[in-house]
Length: 168
Image (cartoon, rainbow, N blue to C red):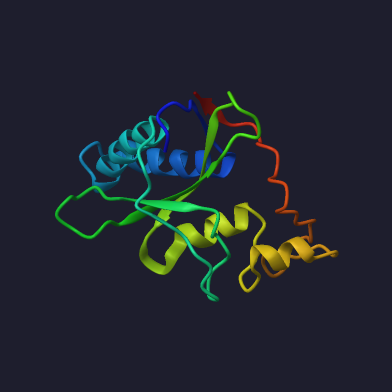
């Protein structure tokens, strides 16, 4: 990323919920793996807000929601083990010169069973089995999970940022 750009850092409400849930568990034991994970996540968020690059970009395998416009960063309470959690976020370039790059934090989830990917897909209104191009062509609402009320999915324009934390 060009260091000349400012970064607007946005924590979406679902991600805010992920942090609250982790904090609630971490509060029970300040020396638990969850407490260490919370500290690692908060430090990593600060680094991302300052311009740190992601672990890698995401793709669109058929078993996951299409998150090809997103990236992931691995986090773990134990540096000597395989990362236990993923942060899923996306970077949106400004529409006009002088505007900041926006980094939207979407999901924090366990690495096992790709929990973070499914959470991110659900929060962005992206059901499994559809590419972003296919979703753009849809004229009818698509349910993102069984029993969920159908809602309009429009990924050509990003959903408006819901109230959440904004840094930057």
